[in-house]
Amino acid sequence: MKTTEQNSTKEDILYYLLKQGQATAQELAECFTISPQAVRRHLKDLESENLIQHQVEPIIIGRPQHIYQLSIEGRKWLRHSYNEQSESHDKFAVTLLDNLIETLGVEQVTQVLHKQWQRKAVNLYENMGNGTLEERIANLAKIRRAEGYVAEWHKEGDGYIFTEYNCAISEVAESFPSVCSHELEMFGEALPDCDVVRTHWLADGQHRCGYLIKTKTGKKLATQNVK
Image (cartoon, rainbow, N blue to C red):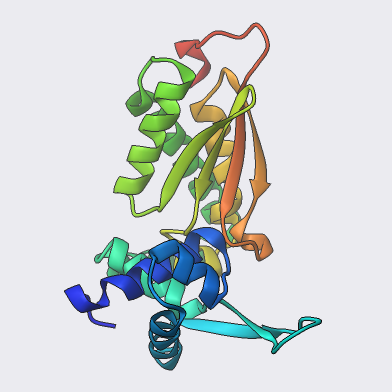
């Protein structure tokens, strides 16, 4: 799908499905304040381009509902739209890791990847600053968005929910699953005064990665904790 002004509603639909996971035509019509007929035309076009797919859900009265969600191609399109250089970067990274494994072996490359995540944690820690937890999480979202993630956060109870609706390194993660498994550890090291718990995970088939972040009881931000 080419990005033009007339396709803005289609893009909005794709981003809505990215964040919500799935929706009916009626839900989309209400969200974007357009007629169900117009939404269905957009959905038909998006499905013909293999960017979305649907499943039929039977209901007791009336005709079955169509539930729409992003296809694999749709997720890729959004990722490339959000970060136009991601595809070439991903291919280079996958090729590089393949060559490293061939040269050094799996164990050595695993250690290198772990070291990279540790360095990334230090970088995040330094760039989030020394403000309140809310300020640091807001900065974390900005950093991740700059890296190609569709990232959001909100306060929930005495903690915060940090969400990433896409994987900016999905092709690398598909070839090397251990890459994304270290993300929880990375956030924990970048927020040493907090407990970070994974609530949702794209790798488990869910439509987002989510983390619950809470300040540890009696714990203050300590710069010496991250090395």
